[in-house]
Length: 440
Image (cartoon, rainbow, N blue to C red):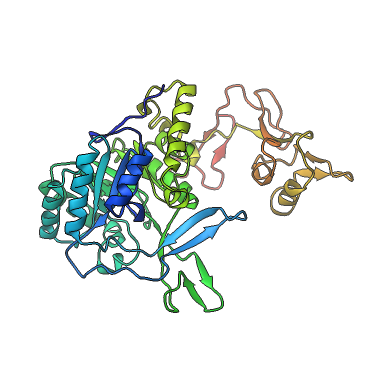
């Protein structure tokens, strides 16, 4: 049996599935239920003390994006950090950690840009015996307007300085939670590393408005006729999150910096993908809010079965395994050619592939009078749009042309060594207007 036990910064947990700092980790009752359901760790919902009192709205706090089957694709929330007294949270954290010593318990923190404020709250957190802290530099709404959250995360100098304060006044692991609301995720990641962060976690929520009530002409959720931007999360943000995780994992400046992956993790496969791109564990929120805490049981069993099938004894066997295969566009092999193929036995003759290709792509699919669809190899550029729009899994596949075969579209023979020299405008002597030189 695969061993799902993880060691993240010396913090041991029975599996890599942690609950992210969010409404599900707001209080002792929730966290105990989460541990009993099987979660390996929890990041307690963000605590704060200095600054104006935190008062959450009593109206709707969530907006949503649904698929045609009513499946939740994205969730927008306008909830602030905890509005419960700091003393109550700290007492509960201490009790829970004492009762579940084998589970990870990290405390999320957010206070103003002031060293004394950080020093004071860190001293109180340390007394709870929590395993570490996560610095919330990502929340894009409410707290950002107070100069905290993403307002800090968008300024690398602030990220580095606060991280230095935390490492100065706190002895246990420090995780810096990064905002995706920035042009280049590497800037705050480098700052966190320079400040002494033990790890980074990402992504926090994306600034968003999910919908507008067209009767009241106000963003949703609507509070007494008005709406505001919130933080977007859920399955829809997973591609954005994985790209940012991969960028940090493969950049020479940040490679080796431990990563906790966040953003749309709903299944064991999502978790495995994040971990293959460099995350040592994953944090989950929307899936738990959608399906309840017991969703983790499917994640655990699915990951365990997959690891057994692949021969992985521990999660460390595949963490970062895909990172060497993440590259820049100019390094891709331009002599690798594929063509679409349609399995006539599986085709239901819906015509979706034909409509998509004919109207929006390369007119590479022909339709006969009896609605038989075939690929015109001489026109197919292998974009695989047809594969993605086809409603029947496996009906349309991409076949690789082997060395020696002639590409019907270009008339060129696939070379034996399958290498292409791609000149880049930054290379000496390269012609920016004719940057691709084949056969060299």
